[in-house]
Amino acid sequence: MSKSIQIAVVGSGYVGLVAAACFAEMGHRVICVDNDERKVAALENGDTLIHEDHLPELLARYRGDGVSFTTDLAEATRESEAIFIAVGTPQSESGDADLSYVEAVACEVARSITGYKVIVEKSTVPVYTNEWICRAIERHGIDRSQFDVVSNPEFLREGTAVADFLHPDRIVVGADSERAADILEAIYSPLTTGEYYQRPDAIPGVCSTAAPPPLLLTSTKSAEIIKHASNAFLALKISFINAVSNLCETAGADVEQVARGMGLDSRIGPRFLRPGIGYGGSCFPKDVAAFRSVAEQLGVDFGLLTEVERINAQQKKRFLSKIRSALWTLRGKRLGVLGLAFKGGTDDIRESPAIDLIRMLLAEGCHISAFDPAAVRRAIEVMPEGPALEYADDAYSAARNADALVIFTDWNEFANLDLERLGKTLRYPIIIDGRNLYEPQAMAEQGFTYLSVGRATSYPVRQPAAAVST
Ligand code: UDX
Image 1 (cartoon, rainbow, N blue to C red):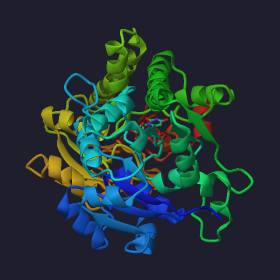
Image 2 (cartoon, rainbow, N blue to C red):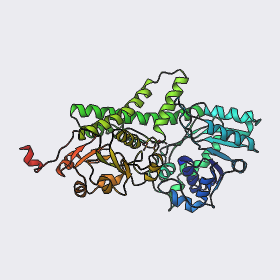
Image 3 (tube, helix red, strand yellow):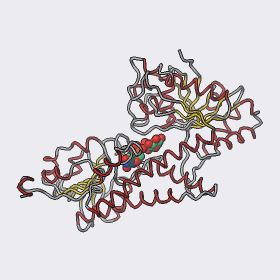
Image 4 (cartoon, rainbow, N blue to C red):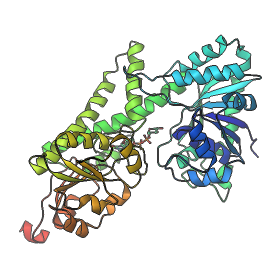
């Protein structure tokens, strides 16, 4: 039976809140700290703040009995053995991560240390942050024997964050002291021993008692680099396939076939090879820029990362040109837009390519009716309704009388639209799909002009396919 440990999680964003709920699910006692009183009050009152599978049920199960919420970091520090820092590390103007929130937490923790504490960086931070945290704490007169700083990067994806946390591919613990490593190993032991997966009420996922996740112990610096390098590598895969998709378009090949053919090579793997309108979200753009900046600061030429960013920015512009190519001119055109979130399954619009593209289309003089199953509320905050922009209640309302329908986000429901109804709703049966959710041939047979990424445009088939080929 694993030991229950008292944990403080500082920051109630995606990573912090999910970590807090999941640590409670693993049998630990958690104090979740945020300096935003409104957030804390909302969490105490049963709000989950973010759209995330399984999170409402876990918070409902443990709120007040396993997880408590507070603004008082000093008290949470005094009461806890391990303090996880999961605050934001936004991008500064030069691309590097702004670590002022991490520093503020480290100083506040230092002021409240009474006995030995392990301080865990869970926020995505550049290499050497660990050392800076140590120095900041020491400056408060705390002896090195009173604390350790550990790096424990988080790899969860939005939308599947809870399952990712409880069923990770790996747990990375960068610790330079045995004492700290032991505490982290104890915290994760319900997962690494497989004990958690025996529970009948365990959140389902890929791990099991027979196949529990490995815990990789590394130095703190290696752990810090593992996180940045992993995200940058995944972004690179996406930019690579997007560049290949442009080649396919010009050569008359089909990028979906190419990606499948590449992905079947087990050394490459099929994941993160989906072409589209470029990656977005709160992590990839920021982390690639931060990793590039770290390399620059350390005097290492890592121009590949600049190219990854360039391809990603270019991909949006290419898609704008594609929309224009379908409609001839854009000024005064009415577009139905499906998708605001940076990917399906989340309400997050941070660095969303959909939002960027809507802004570009509005600047070109288009009228837009946009729909997203979860992200409308957040989109209104940054792009209020106006004469050229309205938000629709569903996909068909967005499409009503539109000159074309544009798909920006890979929500499952956008891949399962009633095409007959859509055809009747649109003014012209044109669909420009930035996520390759449909088969070009099938769309042609349904009477659509269909443009997608890395594949030839298909045009309405008036006769059955067999008759056309003879
Ligand atoms: C990512 C990492 O996957 C996760 O490990 C890390 O902890 C945080 O950053 P997330 O930002 O939630 O997670 O989204 P992810 O599913 O990785 O997608 C990122 C972006 O890439 C999205 O805009 C998505 O649409 C895009 N993407 C992803 C593609 O365009 N093609 C793909 O094949 C995969």
